[in-house]
Image (cartoon, rainbow, N blue to C red; front, side):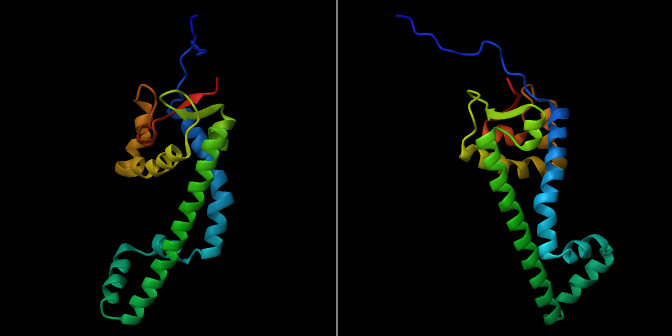
Length: 175
């Protein structure tokens, strides 16, 4: 008796930089409206406005003043704590959203809308929760050095970014 594997003979079509970037834009707009905006409204815009609108020389002057004014240092630490809590909550929510979508639906809404799937690079099976967490954390690695890990998608033969390589994932067109 001869055993045969039921494998699709056609290799997968890997999604390139352009379509993945389009999916990223779609997802970013959706997440900004559904997650980021409510969190910023809850925690307040003051922290971000302060950092964006204060000239660097004035920031430096204020930081030096913290060394001599304990009350100002306390206020500063309170703001840093609040900003840190906001960032941790924001990234925690994003982690859960991305992992659920990658494991359950093989992609985020932007990728699904554009006919893409995120799968295991070894056998094209769905990503595990563990691989999805690694892939999410890999986004931070891909962001280093001016986003080189994301740009790498354009030159890699399977169009993998650093985060894909870390998680052993590929983004393919839906068969």
